[in-house]
Every structure is written in C-alpha cells, then in structure tokens.
Amino acid sequence: MKSRTVWDEESNRTLAQDLVIWYDEEKRLLPWRENTDPYRVWVSEIMLQQTQVVTVIPYFLRFLDWFPTIKDLAEAPEARILKAWEGLGYYSRVRNMQIAAQQIMTEFNGEMSSDLTDILTLKGIGPYTGGAIASISFNRVEPAIDGNVMRVYSRLYCLSDDIAKPKSRKVFDAKVRATMSSERPGDFNQALMDLGATVCTPKAPKCEECPLQKYCESYQKGTMLDYPVKSKKQKAVPKYYLALAMENKQHEYYFKQRPDEGLLRKMWTFPLVEVTKKEYETYLKNWRHYQEQLISPELLVAESSEDDLLEKLTEIEQQIIWQTQPLGEVTHLFTHLKWHLLICYGRLKPDFKQELASDERFLPIEEHQSLSFPKAQQKMIQIMNEKSD
DNA sequence: AAGTCGGGGGT
DNA sequence: ACCCCAGACTT
Image: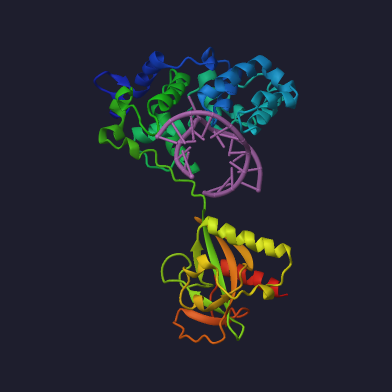
C-alpha cells in the first residue's frame, strides 16, 4: 500500500506525476531549456550556483556565443574565459570548467559522458551539478539536491535535519529518490527547482498555488515556516573589553575570579570592562599614536583618569592612577565569540587600603601556580612580560 | 566539519 | 544591517 504522502487516492496520481504536470504548465522558458544538450546544461548549472536566474541569462547567451562547444572552451585563452565570467563572482567556477573541458577532450573523446560516475570526476562538478546533468541530459534517475530542493522536501515531510550540515544530505537524497519520477527524472528535478524558486519560497511560500499541497505534511500542520531547519553559520560575535592591569606598590597585579556560571567560570583574569567597538577603537588609536613616538610607559602615568572610563569602574578600580594609553592588544577566538582585549595599565595609589573579597587577589605577574588563567589572560601576561624586557 | 570563494537580491 | 542563496573545493 502506498503512502498518502506519495500517492493521492482521489486523483490516482503520484507526487511525481502531479509535479511534472504542473511543470508542463508552468515551467519557466529559459535559454538553457531549449534543448537538453549536456554542454548547455552544464554551463547553465555552473552559472546558476549561488547566482540568480535573471543574472545568469545574458552571461549564458554570451558564453555559448564565445565558446559554442566543449572544444572551444578547452582551447580558449584564460583571459577570455575570465572575461566571460566577469561580474558573476566565484571565478574558480570558470577555471574549473575549463579544466573539466580539457579533461573531457583528453579522457572522454570530447563528449560529456552519460555515466554519473564519470561526470563526477570532472573538476567543479559535485553531487548537485552531476545529478542535474545526468537526469536532464541523459534521463538518469538521479536527484539534483540543492538548498531549494532541501527546502521543499523539509516542508513536504517535516524533516528537521539541519540543511547546513553535510551529513543531512543523505536524508534528503533518500527521500527524493523514493519519490522522484522514473519516467521523466530531468523534468522532475527541474520542476523542483522551479517550485522552490517560485512557489515554495523561503519567507512567504504560496501554498495555495502549490501542486504538492495535498502531499505536504507541514502544510497540513500549518508549520511550513518552521522549515527548513538551518543552523546559522555562527560567525564569532566580536566583543570589546578593556583589560585592567592594576599594579600595587609590591609589584603585584589585581586579579578577579569570574562567576560560577557562564563562559570561563571560576577562572581568573584582569577585570574586563566591556566597551563599544567605537570606544575600543578610540583607545587603540591613541595607543598606536604614542607607540610610534616611542614614549616610555613610565612617562605616561597620568595624574587623572580617562573620563569615559571612570564611570564604568568599581571602587578599587577608581583608586588607580591610570596610564592614559593602553599597554597592548590581545584577540582571542571562542566558538561563538571573538574577544578584543585592550590592556590598560595603572598603579594603585600608595595610600590605598581595602579588604579583598574571596574572588579578588593581588599576585605577582609571574605567579601562575595558585590560580587558573584562561588562554586570553595568558596572552595578556605574555605581552606584558615582553614589554618589561 | 569548517573555511573559502563574489555578488546581487530581498527585507 | 542583515538574510537568502540553482555548491564545490581545500584543509
């Protein structure tokens, strides 16, 4: 018995049949769809990687005009192929395509092989493009799975696999193989592309127009917008801190233990005062200015504090005579954070006395037996040691 | 598995 | 200022 999400009893049609029927009616008329010549399909699929259809059309026509055959492409001067790609971006695509064209000339007698295994040996042709060529040009029952198809299928079957993860690919591959047309695999794949581009769009899918509506599990639940699940490429968020290196009369530095929860819990660092990027850059700029003039840090111990800084400091930190310019800079990368640390040096007023809490210590800078310092703190200590050499 | 490679479009 | 891409290669 067939599943109702693959086969519709009422119309007695399969998902694939409904999709191809829709495609016959609604397919976009595009230059590379005039015929299924593998060279044309290849060129179009490479151009369409990470690039919109409207952008590709004029490039495609000119490319076929300049390089009508695989042989022409293989023999073209490099400057010419780069010119043909100018403005499209991802220029390794066209370099790889020429290498592949040369592969085809020497290894495949000048013709695109109809065997997917052969096709995948060509430079720049991966699973998606290989599947597209094999299905469209050679009628092979092979899926062509890109971000678009994964969006459609994640909604069809409520697949929560993270489409940003390479290993999710096999989940979608299995689903597409189980549902695709064996009669018209090329049209089926192109229909999925059109559906993803025009109906099953990321933000506002037009479900009322969708030929697969009755098969779509997320539509029936109203959860279309929950799919696809895609982890954000968590680029490290920049954070900016002033790291306060405070020295007392005994040449010890003030360290503070981080809280019992969160990042670097219970580790010891200089006090870190978070500032904006703009503030940070202002401090940094001033530091570089003085560094170029080779002014000794000793001469820079100022009588007064930085005005902006003062407001953010704790009681003890306000008892410091601050050097007006930072001592150095350290960056440290975490999985999700990028720390920018500006080392600000200051001396405790000689007459200052205060009880220290259990999470505060004064230690010689070279002392690192009794406390645990995170890497970022070690980097700061190293810089300070270099300065004092 | 993560980083790299351009650019244009939409919001 | 983000997010979305008709991906494949390198490390």
